[in-house]
Length: 277
Ligand code: SF4
Image (cartoon, rainbow, N blue to C red; front, side):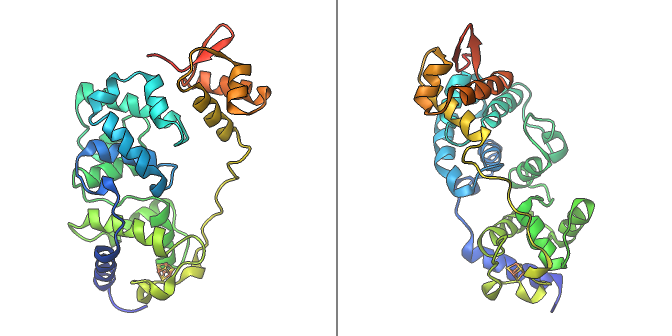
């Protein structure tokens, strides 16, 4: 491996300035759109998030708008994005922000509903300029390959802090994310065109874990279909929902039980509907 960390950082940031992905949430330092985008990005690919993000920001341009919105409306807006509990928690976070203002740093941001350490770091860095690494799966994979061993936990955080260039946290974090998404992919990374190949131990030193099982036929798929079937409907029986969703009544009932316990569906007698509150 050649040169110093400074040369590697410069090569990375030069590549990023030419190749960065122009997502709408990157055009602002307002914490609200950054929070919304980070919650949407938690389990969904960035390109899929874009239309949902744009619609959501039109409907709820500030925390107060989401804080006051009925859950049925929020779930209808979220429908299709999946992992619908995120919408419920995001509304709870909006209510806390609306009542008490924004937490001022990453540690306090972690106190908001649905906000883990990565999302808190991302908001603190991208909105409030806190100089800290945003440690997620892309960053883990790229750094592990640079260092030639699987990094995790404290080793990973320390490596990221070591690499983070002074005063350039926003660009560096986004550059690492883009490098991981565009070139240093989990499988078949494009080392031949990588700007930091001279400082990297190599792709074979770290193989990313396989993603979890498929979506088709999963309980997550069934819950999403049930929620979509309930959008725009009044109270409905499990059979009516099953007919609308095109899935067997036994799966509908299991999905409804889970959704009711999560607070995403309300039950009245033998009928179900999206919550009003
Ligand atoms: S050289 Fe290959 S393995 Fe190393 S960071 Fe670049 S794309 Fe990833």
